[in-house]
Amino acid sequence: MRSPAGQVRARQREWARSQGVAFDDQGYTLNLEDNLYVPLSNASMKEFEQGDGAELPRDGERGKMQALHSSSALACNVFEYWRQRDPAPLAEALGLTESIAEIRFEQKYRTGLPGNAPNLDVILALTSGRIIAIESKFLEPYGRHPAQFNPKYFEGGRAYWKSAGLKCCQDLAHQIQGAERNFRWLHAQQLLKHALGLARSGHEWALWYAWHEVEGTQGAEHAAEAAKFGEMLDLDGIGFRSMTYQDMFMRIRAVCTTQHQPYLDYLGNRYFA
Image (tube, rainbow, N blue to C red; front, side):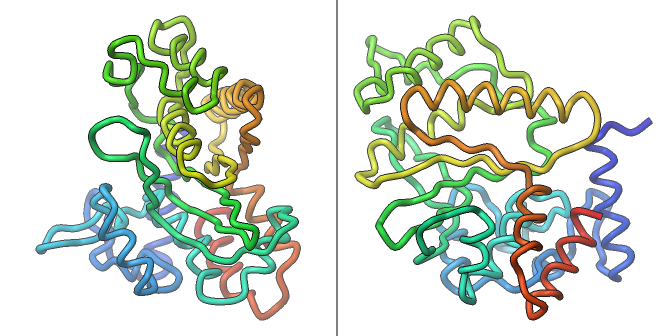
């Protein structure tokens, strides 16, 4: 019997076959464009080229975004469409009281530590200057991720989160590092790193978590972990929000007019059937 994640992978392959999209034995499309509803804009291409995730094909090698199960492809299929037109329906669907001025991908906010800054999947820049930072997940929660932080986050007794005004995040980071608190499905360390970088960015910000829900106990446990994590971050006033892509799609569909029907049909048939 397939795992819930395996079932999603199988559905993605069934979708590709139904659309005549060719893919290899690992579930990667032969061309990037075949995995996207609309081609990436020049600005989006540049942002992914400058990112650290090897998402785009390069020098004859396939990119991670070519995977039918790619979370970056999922994010692009939902958000790139609105980068190329008025994003007012997206703002309404997400319950934003401000207009979206710009949508960006693969943005980096430095944590203050040496090494590469973590890449945030989607940024919604609002007209006020406030930013909504979105970490996007498809099947990653149901694979492996590190149980602890790199020790550099605690060397010399440094308290990076506390220094950035995030005392509760600092406490949580220590609990994770000391194995006092474990997240089996949620990559809490990654989200805490994002919070640290955003706290040092000089912007008003909120951190959101968008994820694809799978059936069964794994999905339910992941949802519970995300909710508990949010409660902890809210103690620092972060405004953390966890939302499934299924819920996001229903909200978008509810506010869109018929001119957006092809976009809705693509998302519905591919990801939410």
